Image (cartoon, rainbow, N blue to C red; front, top):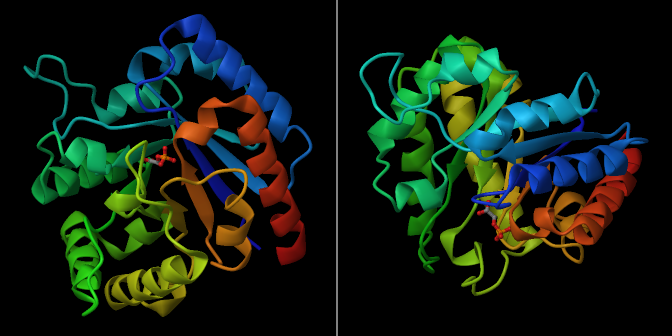
Length: 260
Ligand code: PGA
């Protein structure tokens, strides 16, 4: 059985590098005995090297970035490229988070980033999600078009390096209405897999992890994994509180043991 993919998305937290080291150390402690979880720390760019040092050669924890430039090295002030990230030990990168999209990131920008990351052999976590649900199922079309746009012209071999995170916008952050339900997630995940299957074939598509994100906490995490059959979770706020995050890890570990 594949490991449960848990991504801690720290967003623009914490404020200092020493706090970042502390969070990373806590994550290392929490994951020590886990055999069923692949823990991914999605860290702000300035702290990536410090967290890479803390993680060292620890197995079961992956270093991730929260975004990447659509460009290669060159005259692009302020940009951080895929090869820079790779050279400091980043293995995975989030692309197309709604908080980047709301800052002007377009579908074309997402696709350009995906291609740059795949070229460097990095794993890409593509975030998709609708702004609002409607009773006619149009939201599924919105999700489909985000997936297709992100993966435009992606070769079949890309399937091994992809993760899809379904994050409905209404479920994310302090202003969330609520989280989705495990059933709601399951329906969307089936739909996403159909879209992936059309592009990569059913055998490859079934292996692409489809995660749930949006107000995941220590109370609902296990339900999304068990009842929602999520391949993993993308966790924002709760990943910054060590006690909550430890509880999520423990819950995921229980589900992981049942899945074996
Ligand atoms: P949240 O954020 O868990 O704080 O809702 C999730 C995300 O935006 O990745």
